[in-house]
Length: 165
Image 1 (spheres, rainbow, N blue to C red):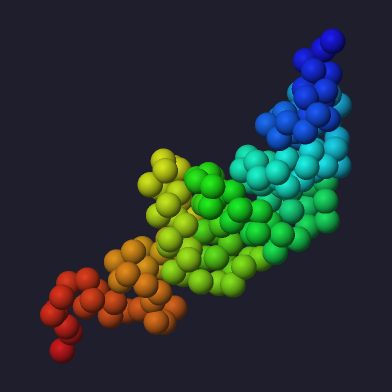
Image 2: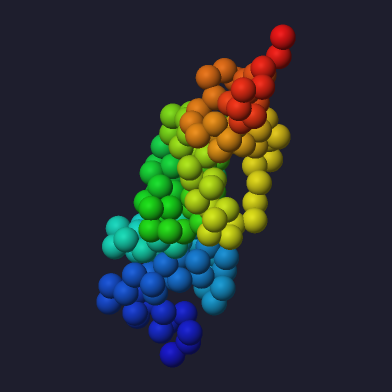
């Protein structure tokens, strides 16, 4: 019995880890012909059992439309499920969703919360847009959401009593 056959046998018996791994095998063609619909099937099966890795991967499928119709709301939902279980990559993606308003309400406070979580867990990434990094940085510094898109006087809150005249 091949490695992929053994994995499929465990997956069919309900093992969520094997289901997630089988989804990856189908997604990248590792031991099986690449088949994105099968990848999504196995990711969803494992995700429904609470497997954080599968939730993250299924979120990615929904985000890109690979193997499933693109649905950014579903992408954000699956990213959140995995992030709540402690997966830093998923928290990073969820922060991006909130920063850009993709599939989730644009909310700088939530973007900052999930970006901080991801970075605290060792995620090395930064957002591609410097403005988004700036906004999230303001959320960290101010303890909440900036009141304007370009909070030109937000430094007053950080520096204490310093004001311009």
